[in-house]
Image 1 (cartoon, rainbow, N blue to C red):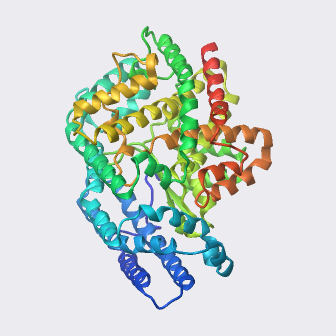
Image 2: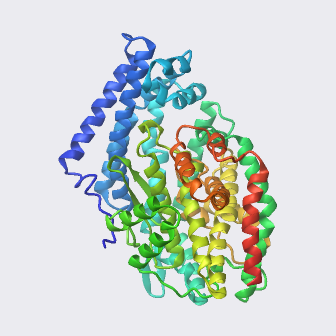
Image 3: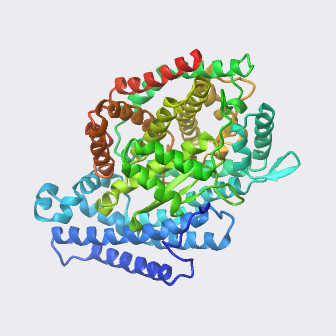
Length: 581
C-alpha cells in the first residue's frame, strides 16, 4: 500500500500537456465570462443563464488546477517551482474578480427569481445562489476595486499566509541532539513517557522563538487587511462578515457559545482529574493535555488502521466502508510527516474524478486512526455532493465539519463497546481530549482571534503582545483545569486557521460540527437504518440552504441553546464515567 498520495489522476506534472491546456481554457472562459457580463445584446434571463453556464465551467477547471497546485504545495512548502505556479494561478483568477463582482451585482437586479426559475432549469438549480447574491450585493465595491483587491491580496494577505505555512513547515526543532520537524515534535505530546512529553513541549516552545516575530507580522497584516475590507464593505466586524458569508445567524452562534460557557466547568473537572491521575496538584500542565491514560499501548499499522475503520463503519453504512477501502487502496492518502510537509491534516475534494485526497501526519496511535476517520468523513461528504449542481457543491465552514465529526463520534462509540474497563478509560480519555480541543481550545481560539481583530485596529501586536493575549484566552477557556505555570503562549503561531485573508474565524465551526454531530448521533441511535438516507440527503444540501434550514431538515433547532446543551450533556456523562473509572 502506498504511503504517499498519487496525483497522476489529476495531472502528471506541471509539464503535463493537460495542465497547460486547462490553464489556457481557464483564461479563455474567464475572458468569455468578462465579455458576457459587459454585453448588452441579451435579455436579462438569457444573460443570467449564459453567466451561470460560464461560471460552472470556470469553477470546474479552476477547481482542478487549484487542487493540484495546493496538494503539491502542501507536501513541498519549500519548493520554488510550486510557489511560482501558486502565484501564476492567483494572477489568472484575480484577473477575473471584476467580472465576478459585476455578475453578482447583475444577479441582484433579477426582479423575481422564482419567475425566472419557472422559465429556466438552470436558474432553478441556482435559486439559493441568486438569492444570496441579492443579499450580498450591498457589500460589493466597484468592479475595478474588487479586481484590485484580488490582485493585491497575492502580495498581501495570501502572501503573509504562505509565509506562516512556510515557516512552520520548515522550522528546525532541536531535540535531544537531533533536528526534527515541528510535526514530529508535536506528535510526541501523545507519548506514554512523561519525560518525553515535557522535553518535547519545551523544545517546541524554544523553537517558536526563532519564528515568532515573523509570524506575528503575518498575523497582524492579515487581520489589518480583513479589518480594512470589512470597513469598506460595510460590515461592523470580521465576525459579522464571516457569519454573512456562511449564511449563519448570529443568534445561532450566540446560542452555541452560551451553552459552551455554561459547560466549561465540566471540562475543567475532567482536566483536573486527569492532572491528579498524572500526579499534578494544580491542574494539568499543557504538556500532559494529550498524555495517554489507561491501557494505551496499541499501535496501528496502516493496514491495521484500514481494517479497523472498514469493520467499524460497515456497521453504519456500506457506502462509508467501501469509500474508506477505496481511499486506502487507491493512494488517496499521504500518511507520514516529512520535511517540507504541512502539519495537521486535511481532506481535499476532487469531485471531477469522484475522489478526494487526504493529508495526515500519521503516528500509529488511536488518535491518528481517529484523525483518519475524521478526514474520511469529509471524503464521504464530498461523495454525497458529487452529483449536485457544481455551483451548489460547497458547504459553509460549520456544516463542512459535520460528517467528519460524526465519524469521530461513531468510531469512539464502536471502540468503547468492545473495550475492557482499562481500555475504556483510555478510549474515553482519548475522546475527551478531542472534545476538549473542539470545545475548550476552540473557544480560546475564538477569543484570541476576536481580541486580535479588535486590538489590531489601534496598534501593532508584537509577539509578546500575542503571547499575553493567548494566555489570557487560555485562562478564560481552560480556567483552573490547566496549570497556570505550564500553558502554551505560542498556540497562535502553529495554527494555520488564523492565517487566511479570505476565511476568518475558522475556529467555532469545529465546535459547531462537533456538537451538531453529537446531536445527529443521538438521532441515529433512535432511527437506525432510517437515519442514513436522511443524513446523506442533508449532506448533499449543505451548499444550497442556510445552516438553520439544513439543521431543520433533521428536526434540529440550532438557534436554541437547549439543543447545544443536550449535546454537551453527552460529554458531561463521559466526564462522569472517566472520573468513575
